[in-house]
Length: 521
Image 1 (cartoon, rainbow, N blue to C red):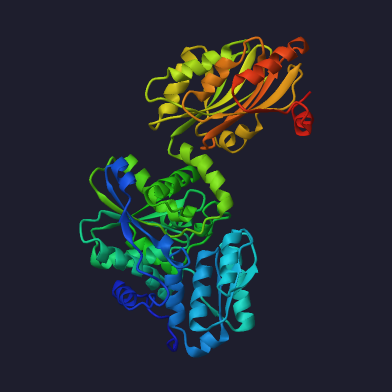
Image 2: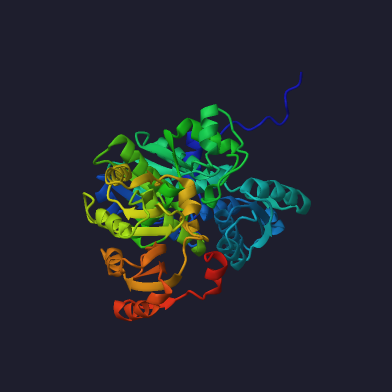
């Protein structure tokens, strides 16, 4: 039997990757990003946390390193024909910038779910954008078809030795920038290019340093693949961290990660939102969800293992955050850090019960607490069900608070970890009711300071029953409350006089068409 005239090339060795990383061409477009301490987070965790600021690259992501290194190794003929890539956004910007630098045409296939911010950024760099599919994997298949049809060169976002080597230059910089002890480097994983490059370099030179991979719990293709000892294709992926939403990791990245990565951590959405806030506090920069995965994992790692005095590096791999997503991140960050607890509280439907409940909140043990949310709509003649949010200071505190409420006759269900409550119920408390007769609806504005909500409730006269109450602390200087009060017609003049002497700006909304359509019986 004759031998194969074109046998497959042997797998690249660690020495091969070390050489490729040391000779990678990335600095025509990339900068050596800073490695800086997260002082506030470090103090809180009792360990030193170093942030590798890849969010400060020209395209706000590490991806231009690998993309440019790959393209810089193409022949003049390949560059003249043009390049094509599939990307959820960050790799696309790297390819577009690299192509502009090298004078090549760049066709970029992006999922239709890609944030508009990233689409606009690719177009601004001269890339030709084609939107196709719901995930990176869908865009990838389409891009391969277009590559063959138009004779373009495919620039893979992760499963290519030159791309992996380009990303590995981040580890080269970390070890050069930090000469002291380093216990672990935490790396976000999508398709695996970043962690493959980082692990290849670190394990070649400093094998005692742990390399820890991080994935979203709803996009954990690498974690499942390593556990199964073969690549596992996910049927679907979560899109909150769109930069790591990959259904199937690369062949080469899987091979490298399987042999070099020490362990893996999965984090959830709330933990990532909390990490985005932590990074902002230390840097005054806002990273995208993928960029915060490493910090979320460090916090989880420290909590689970109780480490003290160790040093960890987190690669902040991107900052292409959609501005519209910030509202969601801010909403979930407090719960992710367990700085906010949510409860469904049942109180007697009788005059003064709101005030007694708020007084109990003010007497809870521990640090002074603020009411972050208070939503109620009259629905029963005997019991009132209130959705309440409170600030907390330590993890696990919500159960203790719920027990205290119960001991004082206010039945409470802890909703802090209830996804339905966090996503939807908090916005749905309300509706029509036949019990809210003689209801007047008012919007109030009051200074946002500790005790302001209790003061507001104490000023309301007990003979005017509260039938609706909506309040959410938005972090502004002033709080806004929507209140429904049952005021008999004979009391209208006295109520109007009360409003004028109350001292809070207000707008009456009793005739508002939206109120009449959706809230008034």
